[in-house]
Length: 177
Image (cartoon, rainbow, N blue to C red; front, side, top):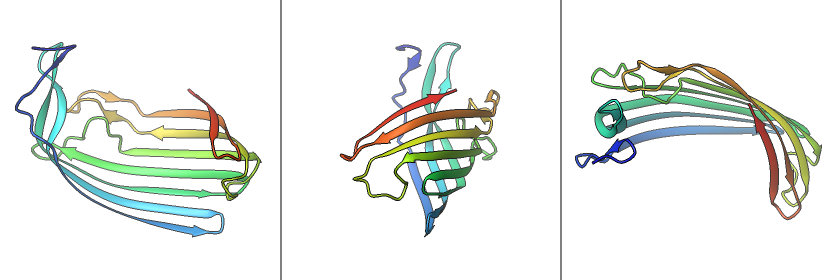
């Protein structure tokens, strides 16, 4: 029996995940630096794979691994900025040479903002208005488990405005390309 192109799999096993991560955060006046590293292993990994031209099914695969680092630097009071980078190396399959589908190796972003009124380091009970713009770069990544089909690297832009009032709620408007 299939439903909407999905076939059930009664033999599917639960994934077993082992994970270690560690991070560090440093703050000096209006500058904050965050860095983290991680390692993850998943046994009986579940991936959705095609079983016919029109049907996919969840199946277990032996093992996958991911290792990576994340870093983030931000600063400013009225003119604010934030730069972030993530490296994520994934592997799965019998020899561990295939890249996990849907996981790009590199992600980077830069966000710039300006407090029209208020400041980043002000108490939350004060109102603020921020106008901001952000660019994101994502490296190419595979869409299938055999690493045959890939999505191109892409750069996206976003811009917006965030208003926070004295009661603590925030209202925002965001535009993305």
